[in-house]
Length: 215
Image (cartoon, rainbow, N blue to C red):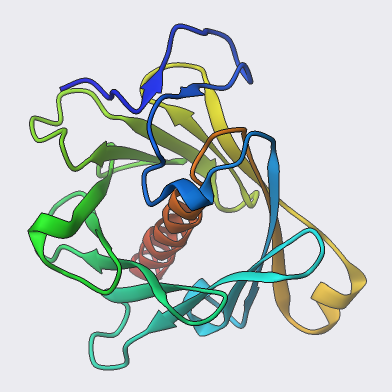
């Protein structure tokens, strides 16, 4: 089933897709203009200390993990601590599959989208994203391409060249001094930025797994 969330008549890098729905996570996370987000993580992984703010420093999201489930279960919270989405790693899958559910649910009826690596062996990370209705998964609804070493990634609508968001590292003297990684994410107009943040968390988790596996 083809993605009907975005119309992809526009072609060309940076043209941006046109939203025809009410958002993937929710319409409150869509804006008719570019949304710039700052992601700050402490220590080694996003889960060790993770916050997302707007350009004015107002907190939009934070990440909650579970010690019991190690890194297989994450909950993205909004500014007042309400669960926005729950991210769960699907165990025993060859391609690092993650499932994202609405709120704090893990019920399949609340599945919003799934993410998996495009292939097992990769020099640069490529992730395929499938919305819940896309059960056949013949064509992905979104694609994430990035180099974690360079701290950059681009998220595309389906197999097109339409960019919906992109991330790059922000170097500051403070971030180096306090052991923080700062990332800037630009989310294009009418794109659900809660959805984009969830994708970046999964990208980080998959890259951390690959790093640990390679010793």
